Length: 105
Image (cartoon, rainbow, N blue to C red; front, top):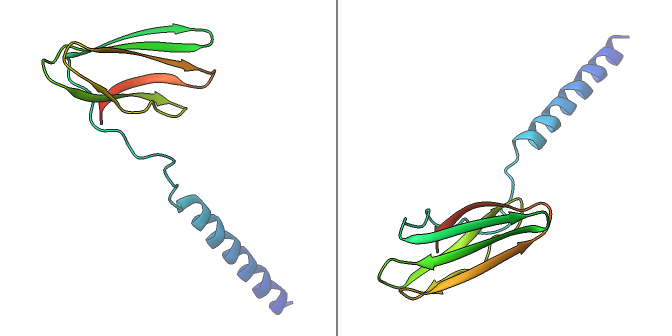
């Protein structure tokens, strides 16, 4: 009987160690993180609808800026180069994505 108890104790310890490894393992990032939030001179006007959302980006900075739309729960937009005074309309279609912020890139 004592051997049975030792085997059971070892099995429980091994299972606990395995669960601990599974919980603490780092997750891989699907995409590189976007830069910091774009400055206030980048206008962003968000319009949501049941099929997704659109973001109108306007560069009022007086110089060329590179920005992207960061989307929670879905892929971010590509990086847009906007010359001074330029604008870009980004459209997201889907049910999971939510506008998070506009970032420099």
